[in-house]
Image (tube, rainbow, N blue to C red):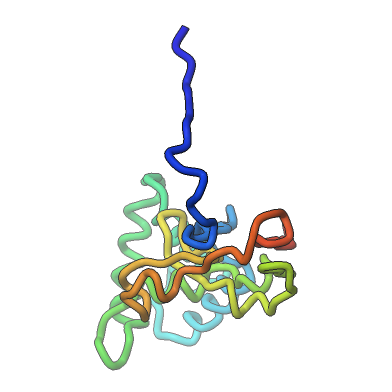
Amino acid sequence: DNPTITTLESQHYSIYNIYFPAIAICSNNKLSKSKVELYAEHLLKLNLPKQYRSESRLIELIAYMGRLYDADIEGNDEFVKFQEILDKLDSEKATGIYDTRQKLNFLAPNCSDIVLKCKWGGQYRNCSEIIQTRRTNEGFCCSFNYVRPSNDSDNFEASARIAAGIGPDMGLTILLNL
């Protein structure tokens, strides 16, 4: 009974004035298994309390870090105790603070493992030149054309990409490793 009607104000607005949309590719796995194992090996070299001196136990506790993105509170008390130990034993030497954001970035899957090939504007490109790791509400994701004020450039217009033309070959084409 109430159809939606869309009209164009003008058909004379050039596509070259429209920014290509930002795209984020986020893995369901918030943490890389190999990086979690590497971090557990690092922690085993520290003076941990006895209950945390097993690699399998550390891997289980580090996996709780992936739940920081969710509202899941299962195991929360245990993780808080583990966090207190990390604050004491694995904090940054310069600041004396355990940087959770930096650690989650380290533990996240690499974009080079997720995004295998990239084509932008009809030309194959090195993916590392156009895809960056960005922190999002879904964790650290592989992003294209994602601009925000905390970027190196505060000038939105200078850093956002505009498509070279219309059609499937003029946009972004990527091959993902799923």
